[in-house]
Length: 165
Image 1 (cartoon, one colour):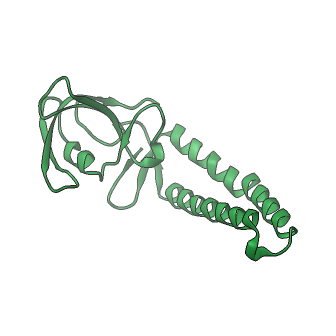
Image 2 (tube, rainbow, N blue to C red; image 1 turned 45 degrees about the vertical axis):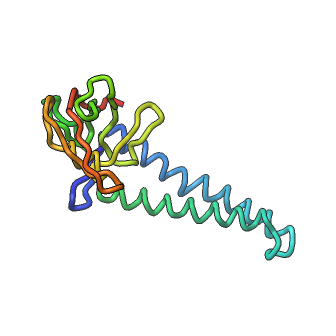
């Protein structure tokens, strides 16, 4: 998945289908489940001191926020192919970098939106300091980026290849 500046999010067909299925679940069965939890908690009596009711309402709010996020994301999504395997770092690529040129101190990550994050690989947004620093660089090039403390750091691009899920 990649994001562009005009709020279009490029998704693989697999990612689009996965997010659409999540939206359909949250909009249908999950909504019905949370409504039942709220109703059951409401029947317990005084709502001011009803922890189950407040927990269910909070869960409902988080769920509705996710529904809005997914709806907006999918409305602005363009389905396409993964990026080309041309040695250029871009969103949708798995990137391996060496910190400060030290070939032993490396990090491999997926450059993509957090919607694509998985437990299998660390994900950095193209808008993050490291992500924006390496975006557009080629294998063998150095990239500089600003750390949260204001200091500059550098990495060397060791490898980049399209993410295949």
